Length: 250
Image (cartoon, rainbow, N blue to C red):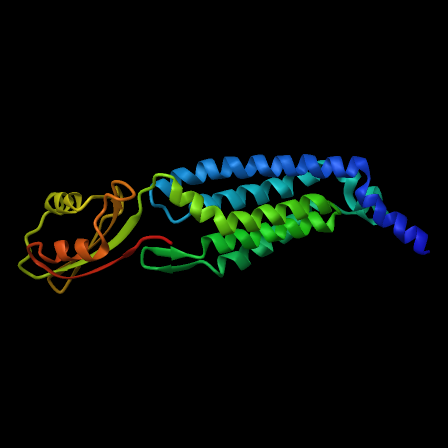
């Protein structure tokens, strides 16, 4: 009985299965690079989902897809008879859907500030790793675990090395006699090294007083004024009663 069990375990490390694991890993690595490429554009423009989020999601999606193409290597090449009677793809689909709801629970939004996206992506990635282990692709699972951990630890450093434009969420409250136009505000924000993001402007009227909300995106990594200086500049604008400034993403 022990010999049968040992041979079953050794089946997971045969040359064909190791080659299949390596092929899966190459696909995962390629997906990660492409996800980073797309995520950098979002990160550069100051969006909430950046390189790490896109990279993790793309990598996990690839892992869950590529294993369906090699069912003959599942479970060390000893696919149970019961597997033929079910659709493993539906099992994987159920796992990813359920974990997706779990990941959504860690995403927090406070005004225009969004946090938890990378954590949600990492939870989904762990689900993909679990599926890889479940079907017996141990090498690919270990490699994916290692690359995911390293990427979450040092991915932000990679983002910091590349040119980027950070975003600031601004809320302004005006007095009743305020006479500041959007063009004047745009020029003021521009003088501090920021541009008003297109489509982010909203105006609310309450009891004769206006509330303006918008996102300001810096012109470069070191070109935008600090939050304190930007706030002081906005507070001096005609008709501004008070303001609130915060990072639009983290």
